[in-house]
Image (cartoon, rainbow, N blue to C red):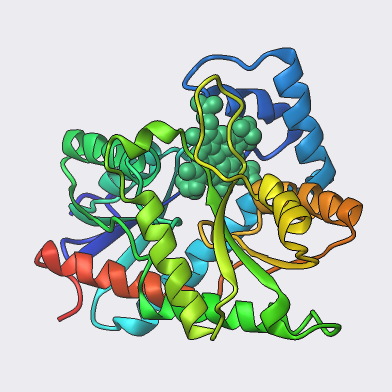
Amino acid sequence: MSESRKYGPDAIGVLVMSYGTPESLDQVEAYYTHIRRGRPPTKEQLDDLIRRYDTIVGGFFPLRRNTDLQVAALQETLDRTYPDAKFVCYQGQKHASPFIEDGVRAMAADGITRAVGVVLAPHYSSMSVGGYIKRAKETAEEAGVAMEFVESYHLHPKFIEAVADRLERALKKFTEVDPEEVKVLFTAHSLPERILQMNDPYPEQLLASSRAAAERAGIENWQFAWQSAGQTNEPWLGPDVLEELERLHADEGVDYALVCPIGFVSDHLEVLYDLDIEAQALARKLGMHLERTDMLNTEPLYMETLADVVGESAKRLGAGPR
Ligand code: FEC
């Protein structure tokens, strides 16, 4: 082993991939341009995004810190779960540094030859997780790292249990009414409607995990809605959570709603702004009582879910836990 190579042949890299976030307001333009595949946003679009970040962050970007904490907690869970194996976590972000490619190259530079890739998003879409995997695969081939990937873990029993626990806890906040009267709205990031023609599993997986979590928490009064759709010319998956709240209130007399953003695992812009500020403002206007379930962040059951699926993938490499 050369001196610069940190690890021997037994080590298994774990590329933990996540969406990424700017680390300061002056990085928002580069970040937004990256999300738009190199097309800079208009001044109006940029100002709007800076305003949203400014509202939630006050100089502190929650997703950056939450991702660091999640990766550290996963490393600790892997070490504890598989004491005979040597897993080493690396970060790779979709839209910010360190990028996915940086993570793969860092593994190779440290002497890692086999690795597992996992995304901090439980549901597979060719436009989300599929894109992360494609980029990691291409760089891994160039760098000589053999990789296996976790595509989804949306029905893992520990993930479902963690979501169900949060649903039960949040329902207790509606002290003025029976829990059955609270409409539970599971949400996830919308995607362009054209994914339906591609037979993408994303909508089905989201419905399946919502159904499983609702069942486990004994909830019957629930439905699914999309959130945070992009401002483009093509149609996005609906119904949108804001429109659905208005409709439920007007047409069905719903006054109590609990949003469970099951498609996300961290506190970040799409939750802290789109739900806690935008949806709450709408609920106040309509006179509704709206709550949201807590995010998973470093929840041990979530970390154990990730450790489980990483361990399973490592077996496909002929490595890892026996
Ligand atoms: O807190 C933060 O700094 C980042 C929060 C954040 C997460 C996130 C997750 C997903 N997105 C998904 C799809 C799209 C598509 C577009 C798109 C655009 C944005 C913009 C921001 C943003 N997303 Fe995101 N997303 C987060 C943030 N996202 C900011 C740009 C401004 C805006 O639209 O609000 C449209 C791209 C385009 O214009 O071409 C599509 C999906 C997820 C969940 C899965 C995952 O985490 O990968 C899907 C967190």
